[in-house]
Amino acid sequence: MLVGIDEVREFETATSLSYLLAHNKTATKFSFSTMTSLYFEFVEEFSRGMQQNKTIVNLDRQCAEGFECFSGRPCLRKLLKKVTGKTEPEALLAISAAERYLRDNYLLITGIVRHSVECHPAKTTQVDALNKDCWLAIVRHLRVADVLA
Figure 1 (tube, rainbow, N blue to C red):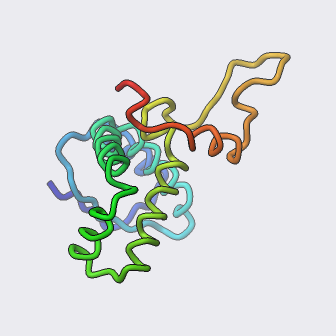
Figure 2 (cartoon, rainbow, N blue to C red; figure 1 turned 135 degrees about the vertical axis):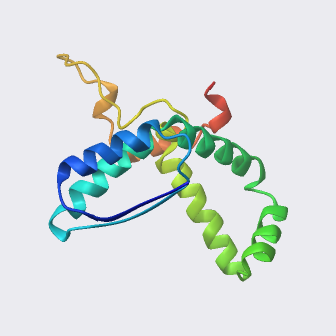
């Protein structure tokens, strides 16, 4: 199902679309434009809705698990070159970018968090105080399959 919107003019429309995306089970393609003044707010709200959609998250997880199984093997690079027409360096770059995406979004893809890590307020340092580099160092040792769905 294709959903098309000529132009988003109000933030309430973005909020409604976010809700639609979070609960969507049938739309597979979206087409829209937005007023320049609303662009960043709209993209943020739109992303929130997509991240809350369990169908999309589960698909990302399945793809990530499959990618992890083959990412270090020559067959992935060979198939990527065949399907996309990429050169060897381009294929290596694409695989490297996919690995980086998986590490950067590990907590979302595995369903550990919905948006970001947040802890209840306390007087001691908590896990939500870790910066991105710390999380990347932790995630480097984990696979998507390590987290039970």
